[in-house]
Length: 426
Ligand SMILES: *Cc1c(COP(=O)(O)O)cnc(C)c1O
Image (cartoon, rainbow, N blue to C red):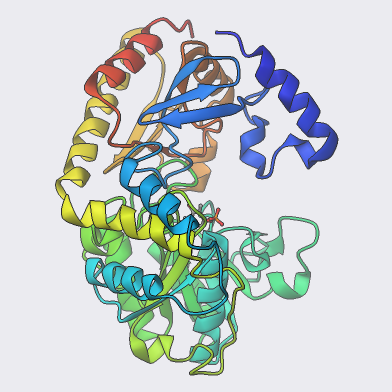
């Protein structure tokens, strides 16, 4: 396929926008080449500026679980837009979405809406610190919780000492309050908690990780984390920005049968408009302003267009919960198809999958944490990525990203995808 106009648009964008993009992973740095510029999309397909039709496995990085330009969402947004786009005053639809979201997920009394997953995670940590009166947090290497300072941290010199900034602009002062642990390694977390006894406000985790490929936690790891948090009065924050309303109505809390203390949402909850949210029991949420002392605000938070998109999306999922199984079935079918071809070609690989999240890693070793994910062969990944793109299959342009299947994908699309893989020379 030819991507000439995309390349020209990218060159123009680079003159005025840093790197030509408004979010770095879009720039294809990990795979090389120029990014594709989209003109429009419908269902499972992207239509780019060169007139190519692509089968999409990203779905805007997760939000569009029912496919692009989903009718009820589009209608709801158009209808709302005619009545005004923002008021900075309360509207009934905020309560409607809050009530529906809380009814779908386990264990939560109240929810607050923000504008992105980043904001949700940032606010959840502030709330946890305010509520517990403690400063430190533990995060896991390879988990992504948005780009707020506290999360842009890498391992420091010793595992039990504090982390270091992994971006210029993050201060050492901020980094010292974020401790880094290894995913799926309960002992590591226990050691950190022991070495910082009484100082840890929260442990934040992607309950099914999706930002180092798709990584599933072991049952004993998750149960152990929950126990440890309860014992040490540490709040367990589930970052369900990716998994919320994707794996099940009740997200990872439901499928793993673990109750978190604070849960963050994003992506699907906004149906493709900018929405994030965080939720907890009333006792914790009432610590937020204006009822409580922890400050948090937003000019466009609870925006009517965003709320109408979220309400249409969650209503559709709530009324049709079979969709989660349908997605999981399609993902399993794709898994089998890809595994068969790669095995036949003798390409070393691991495929991780949970529900509608899946990732392909070019390595012999099981991928269970960031270090094992980073061992994947990036040259093979590049061949795979560009080979698929050349045949009109749009995969995430980084080996560290999960694919997000959307229910508009047909079995014929999945067959086309596997057939494309067959043609690639590794
Ligand atoms: C996408 C993502 C975020 C950040 O959300 P944004 O809306 O991009 O700010 C946070 N956590 C997880 C798990 C995510 O996948």
